Length: 255
Ligand SMILES: NC(=O)c1ccc[n+]([C@@H]2O[C@H](COP(=O)([O-])OP(=O)(O)OC[C@H]3O[C@@H](n4cnc5c(N)ncnc54)[C@H](OP(=O)(O)O)[C@@H]3O)[C@@H](O)[C@H]2O)c1
Image (cartoon, rainbow, N blue to C red; front, side):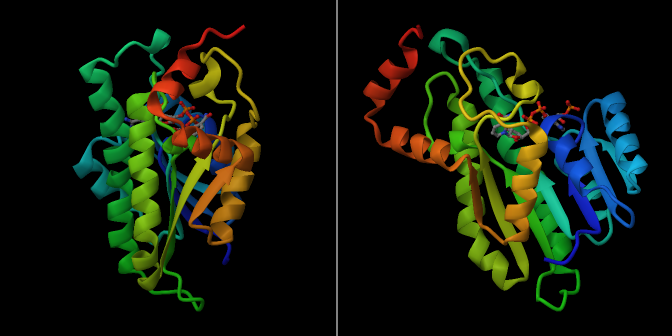
């Protein structure tokens, strides 16, 4: 893959998005980074500038469709767009989600991601292709949760499942237009999202390692990246378990 010289990342003020921004930052690289927390976003921008990148931070809520459209289309030529921003709402004790939680999760994780992806596809269609025929690359950070309807994380799993399925199913048609789509399905990564989460987190990765794997997979033109692979397999197998058995296993007290 040609070196990435211009990239746009949502949710770059924290966790995996921050690690991706820093990993991409270097001389001759232009980064467009977004988040909601202006102070944290500015600190990330400074770190990336100290590595030689030029950085345009933008405080924008991914749920704001018009603002996202304006932001993405005003970014100029883009080699890579990563729709990373999301929220999680682990509901303690298997309680039902509140309606406002359900709506917030879908609006952020699914519609918020589409608010970056669809304008990015529009922009990339208008870009001239590189000699390898590629106009641009777009990745979403989904999750292995896409493979498993976990009681207690209904909208998180469902929003990630919709996103992963949409990306993978859209990839062949996008490829014919010179746009490479990648769905990234990580297991546990040490970020503020997992910080307050109780329980075991098998295979927990540092965000820098997650960013390395994500960028390697995108460079390798993978349509779906799953890591650790055994976590993806376990989630897939868990998804085949009858729902009542899965609910009983998940709600069993851990010793
Ligand atoms: N950590 C894990 O174990 C794990 C595993 C699988 C998948 N993932 C996925 O990886 C991605 C990054 O998560 P993370 O673990 O790095 O979480 P994180 O540290 O909580 O970061 C989430 C980022 O999303 C941004 N964000 C959230 N809602 C937003 C909104 N409405 N508008 C704009 N930005 C918004 C946050 O910005 P502000 O803080 O500035 O609001 C923050 O920069 C997510 O898609 C997550 O689902 C994480």
